[in-house]
Length: 501
Image (cartoon, rainbow, N blue to C red; front, side):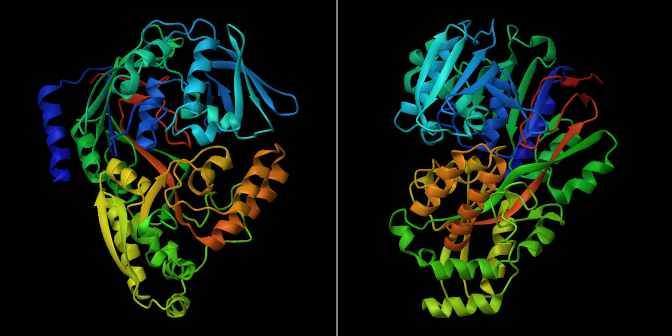
């Protein structure tokens, strides 16, 4: 049904939308969730936000922090304050000025609103102070090294205070930000349309007049749409489609090593479902022993991805080399299940309803079956999966994290006791202490030691089974130029041009 829908989208676009040189259509793997930075959680939502909502700080292609809405910043009081100088002359899409009061409004909204997904990220911030009309200062009780990384993501996105107050609970229906494109309309499960904002502070670098994001879950259908001319760009070309995409002369494939990974989130303490077999640590250990990460990568991804067992990629600065990817051990898996008194444990594995994620689930299902597991793979829309896991209505779920430059954000969100997507309600005070120590220092070697401690704890407890880090592959028409890939996977449209036929 979804494959037919994707092809129908392509046919409709070709029939009703004549190609315009500066109108760009981008195929997304799924429909984003709420377009409110306070509530958003999905990777594809961040792709849309990259065009819609500027941040205080951005990342360059080498993961250095660079100015965006803030032009300069300075740590003070031995790391307990961060002072940011704002870019002059910036306005929101409704014409309101972006000043220190607006920044304070947004940061206070994110860090104090009940139900905000940014609460944990900004919890170390005790106060946001207006120093002068173009300067803000964030004050903390103790040093918080990941703060710049936090401000380079949703917590650093600024919305018009006037528009937020007028919208009330419906901010996501028509977000008013300060990015290069303004919100025009959204049709759920069909498209999001943004138009160029002429008063953007860096308007001279924006050459696209309109961008339309189209959710098409199947990678091969996205590629078919791209080849047919119904898209000018797509994210996440499947590794198994790379040969076909590279063979077409009218297309280009751009790639980058990614920060992101896929992991199995396990419900260890969230409601009645946590009392299932995976609530037993030995069963979780048996499940890991039954999985061959290298074979999974070869079978599903033609060996293009990186088998991994940690939130940091193998070989990267904060990877714990003392705990490498374990080999498959079926005998160990069967022995552990016998010791747990559950030789045939059964559970449901949730996955987003894309062909690739379903295949990953089915490969895990087949591998685990050889050890005695009975796994049912259930596919859901991304939003439905997020809602179910958040309520604790799951046993295990295959999920994506798009990755962040600072290591804290790659693990604390899932596993810290108050992490904003700690769906399984994992709670280990020793782990929380190791993370707190890692945040309190800026020296890389010291942080490495604390993250090694933290990784050893979660690798023993197994509230998540990290599976693989991926590479990013974007497909695009050869008429598109100026795109610069970033390891965070976001599509930045600054400098991008689209030539006519």
